[in-house]
Image 1 (cartoon, one colour):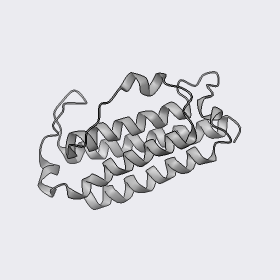
Image 2 (spheres, helix red, strand yellow):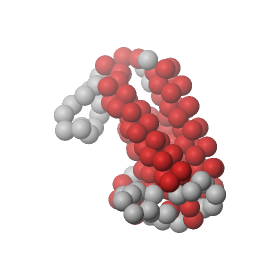
Image 3 (cartoon, helix red, strand yellow):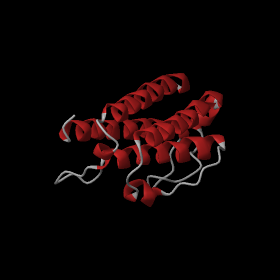
Image 4 (tube, helix red, strand yellow):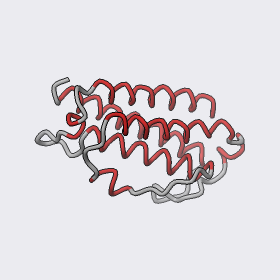
Length: 146
């Protein structure tokens, strides 16, 4: 299962990077059209922080201090800076390659969704979270005229 998740996460993180590259300018990432709660840039920051914390830090011990509120409030990073963040998220996800298969059946080390769950279940949840927000970034990019 870990190998399948590695392929899926890698594919969709690459798709996220492609979305960022397709914005016509750095400023376009931060446009907030009426009725849209989060810019494409903030969604990218959120996804990177999420994966770096829950996979890189919690499962692999990669040093990271998450600032979730900043993921939604920070503005003005360049495409290059966001792409560098995606690379760090890719590194965090790639660390799953060393995860022992038995850990998938163990309870995830942090209670996140209001109840204990296995690591395998939570990794599937994280993948769904990535897909959901990837779709929002795609929609934001197209909505803002690209």
